[in-house]
Image (cartoon, rainbow, N blue to C red; front, side, top):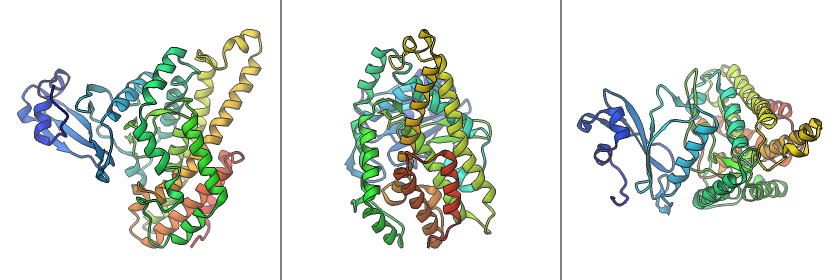
Length: 419
C-alpha cells in the first residue's frame, strides 16, 4: 500500500498499470497510453487516459480546494462519498451516471467511464445548443434518486446506515452551508463580484426579509435529512449529447431536503436564461433559446412530479406514509392527499434553494461561466442584476409562487431595465 500522493501524468500511468479493470479497457502496455490532466473544476485532479483500445477518466481528490490552494485544506475522504453516491445513483436511475471501473480509497481515486462525445451542459448553454431529452432525463433522475434514497422507499435499517455514512461528509457540507447560505449576505473574505454591482449588493445585504429567508433555507438544509441529495447539481455537473444526459461529480452528497437538488438545478437553468442577452451577437437572436431554457425549467419539474407520483403509488415501501394507513384501508384518496402535501413541501423548499443559489453564483466565491464569459461588462451587470432580482423574489415568496408564476416573472424581469 502506497501512501497518498497526488498523481501526475507519469505517476498515474504507473499506478494504473496493474489494475485489471483498467488494463482490460486500455491494454497491458501502459507505455502507449495517452494521459492528460484536464481538470478545470474547483476541487480535484481529472485525467483522461486513452489507448487505441479504449479510454477512461480518473478523478483524484486533492487535500485542499484546488481553486484556492493549500490554505483551504479538505479531507480526502470526500472521494468515498462520491463513489458511494455514484453507485447508489446507478442503481436508482440506471444509465444516468458514468460506470465506475475502480476505486482506490487510499489514493482518493475513482476510475470511471470516459463520456464522449459528451460536453458539459453549461458550455452548451453558453453557446446556445439545445438538448431535447434534457428535461425528461433530469426530471426522472431527480424523482428516482430522491424518492429511492429516502424513507419513502428504503428499508429503515438501510436508510439509517446511509444517513450515518453520508453524515460524515462534514467538510463539503460546511462549504455549502457557508458559501451558499451565508457568505453572499455579508462581506465575506472570499466573495467576489463584478465591479459596478455594489449598490445592488448593499441593498441585498440590508434586506431583512431576504436575510431571514436565506437563513431559513440554511436551517432547512442542515435539519431536513430527508433523502440522499447530489449536493452540487448544476449545469456544470451534467454532461450531454443530443440523445444522452449523464450526471457527474456527487462529492457533495449528503442527506438533505428533497427540494435541494431541484432548486439548485432550476437556479442554474435560470442563470443561463438571464445570461443569454450577454451572448447575443444581435439583440434578440437568443430569444428562442431563452424560451427553450424556460421550457426545460418547467418540464423538469413536471416530469419530476409525474415520476415521483408514480413511485409513490408503486414503490412506497419505507416507513413513511405506509400503505397500511391508506390504501390497505380502502382509502387511496388519503394517500393522494398526502402525496400532494409532500410535493407542495418539496416545491416550496426548491424555490427557496433556487433563489439563494442564484445569489451566491453572482456574489460568492464560485461563479458560473454563463455570466463570467460575458465580455461586455455592462451587459454582464444587467444579467447579474436580473438574477439577483429573481433570486430575491422566489426565496422570499417561495410559499406562494407557482411554476407559471416563476416563468412569467423571469420573462418580465428579462424585459425590464434594471440599470
